[in-house]
Image 1: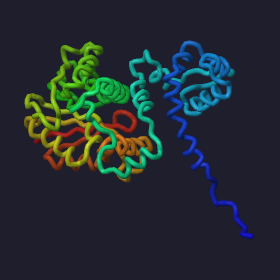
Image 2 (image 1 turned 180 degrees about the horizontal axis):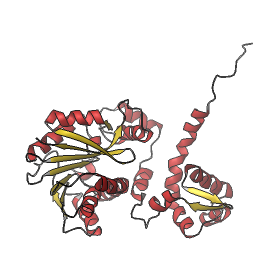
Image 3 (image 1 turned 30 degrees about the horizontal axis):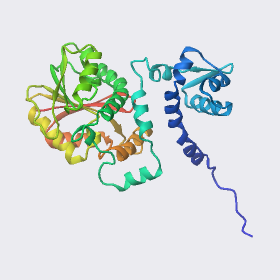
Image 4 (image 1 turned 30 degrees about the vertical axis):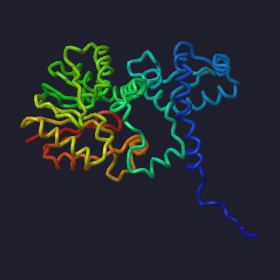
Length: 335
């Protein structure tokens, strides 16, 4: 009989990774149920939550337990309260509500076979045809809302921390919900922003601009940034969460067109999540890199990769400003 010795380390990491599969669905389920709104109004015990949603007590305890362990709730005297993160980002009435992204991801759940297929494909697993050849209004609204909830907090930080003092007319290429443009316009009254968007997306963009009360300083023009010429009457171009979606040759194509359209001394701003040069940290960027494998044909870039792209097309004086968590604002100038 073989004598099997105890392993040299425990298997806690595997257990943690396995159990983490329940974390995000627990968050999306709680948001869809309205749990955060319920506890925002009246902190409650597990049995009250169970009764409110028609759950068995064990189910309510499990859901509340996961959300508390993750930091979305805190328990005092058996009642559950919202933490600051939940107050800011998980209440529908909040201007920072992440509901758009939670809804999108709950409609496109990730599982083993989907990820395996994405890893084996050379092109995007998800198609953007819903916004180009065959516009799908429901999908456009859902995707734009998701990008808005993901982008707005970081956009506000970028507008505050970035140097926009020399900018007068800014073209936000593929600006979607106008989160970046409205944040910049609010923070810098001297700047006029224009968003270049697909005709099918533009009406949604205009709604977000109107909601921000900035129709006098932020407008939309129709255009496909791969097919239509870039206008030449702007001193600044902005790409926010754009380069991450596309292969290197397409990124170079976009940056070259931007370089050609800018005047001498014109600037480009790139707002993207950033990977460490070793491409194994920070954890959120590594996870987002896998998300891009699943969702697009692009990848999360390192600072050196973005620098190389910019220098290849002729940009100089490249600077990097950390703005929000794992996201940076990269700036460069046309000599």
